[in-house]
Structures are given as structure tokens and as C-alpha cells.
Amino acid sequence: MAKAKSIAKKNPEIDSRKQWYVVYCKPNTEKKTAERISELGIKVYCPLKTEVRQWSDRKKKVQVPVLPSMLLVKTKDQDRASVFQVPTVVRYLYWLKNPAVVREEEVEELKKALSGEYSQVSIETMTKGDAIKLNGLGFDDEKAVIKYVTKSHYCVYIERLGYLVKVKR
Image 1 (cartoon, rainbow, N blue to C red):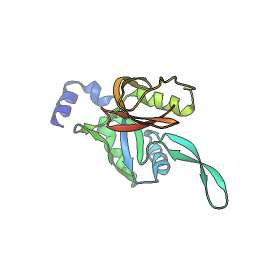
Image 2: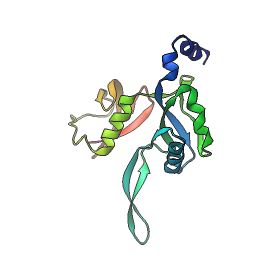
Image 3: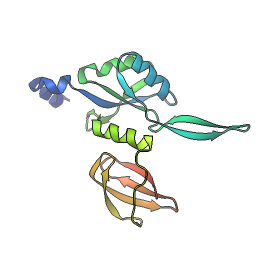
Image 4: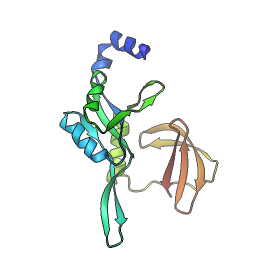
């Protein structure tokens, strides 16, 4: 952490730039937390998808978060603490002892993917254990391994991020 502070002192532009950070919030409070952070004047993005939920008497379309208990906030490094004015904010996501920063391109690609701009992606027939490189959607030559294959999906493990992603065939 001392290293990050010394870099910011040498280059004040790094400290004054707004960046996207990942914030954890209490479970099932993503939309309300995003609304309250927005009221503070901080740019926030809560990626949502529409799902059909069934109750005993009806079906209903509901908006559910793509990233459970997580929001993306765009703020300056020195202003990061202001999100804790919202009681449902828990903490920031850290990567290698520094707050995880999401690139602007990655946020834009997430927005495009959720809006349906990517109509179809051609995928060759692949089998379990195949190593692949992901290109597009914010992944530039990201290494991944296919963990398992179903009739309708590939489950891909993204090594650097440590995530298992389900991709429609």
C-alpha cells in the first residue's frame, strides 16, 4: 500500500483520475445501494438482467443483478471512502493488496453484452481440458480452460481471474 501512495505522490494525475472500483454490498441490496450511492453524486453501475421468476400463483419478470452483492463505482482514489456513507456498503474488492480497478473498456463491454449487442458468437466444437484464448468482451488474449461441456453450455475457467464462466453454445 505504501508503494501505491508513493506513486500517487510522484504523479498527481494518477490520484486525481476517476476509475471504476468494485464495491461489495449486503446481499439482495444491490439496486437500493446503487440508488443511494448515486444520490451522493458518485457514478455507479449495477449490471442487471431480466429473469422470469415463478411463484405458486404467477410468473413475473424481475431484474436481478449479474454480479451478486457487487456494484461498480467510478470515483477518484482519494474519494473512495465516501461510499461508506451508505450503510449497506460492506467493503471494496481488493486484488494483490490494492483496490481492484476495472478498466473503462471492460465496463463498456459488459454493458454491450447485457444489452444484446453481441447477437451470436461462433464457437468451434471443444472438449473438456482444451486451453483457449479469449478475445473480445474486454478479454485480450486471456487464458482459459474448458472445465466441462453440456448440451447447451461450455463452462470455462478463466485462470487470471479465478472465475468459472458459463458460455452458451
